[in-house]
Image (cartoon, rainbow, N blue to C red):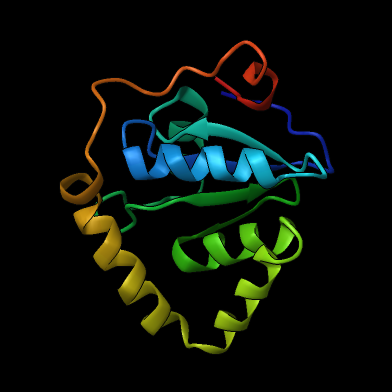
Length: 139
C-alpha cells in the first residue's frame, strides 16, 4: 500500500479502539492551530503498512507513532513529546522532558500504555471522524 502525505504534514498513528488514545487525538486536533497533523489508526491499512515497512514489533511497541514525510517514525514518549512541541505554547513546554533519558520516559509511557484499557476503557471499533474532521484522517 502506498499513500501520500503532504511535506508540511505529520501523521499520528494511534490505537483506534483505545479511549485514552481517542481523547488524545481530540486534544491534538483542538490545539493543532497550524494544521500540522493528520491521523490514522494503527489498525488501518496505512497503519499496518507503516508498521510492516518500519519493522515494528507490535508486541514490544504498543504505542503512538509519529510519521513524517522525511520517512522517519518515532514512538512512545519521544513521539508524544514531539507532538506536544508542534502544538505550540504552552504544550511545547513538555519538551523539557527530553532531558530525561528515553529508557526512563518510556518506562512511564509503557506503564500507562499497559494499563490504558483498564483505566480508560476500550471501544468495540475504531473512532469514525465527524464529517468536519474527515479531511484530517487517512483511512
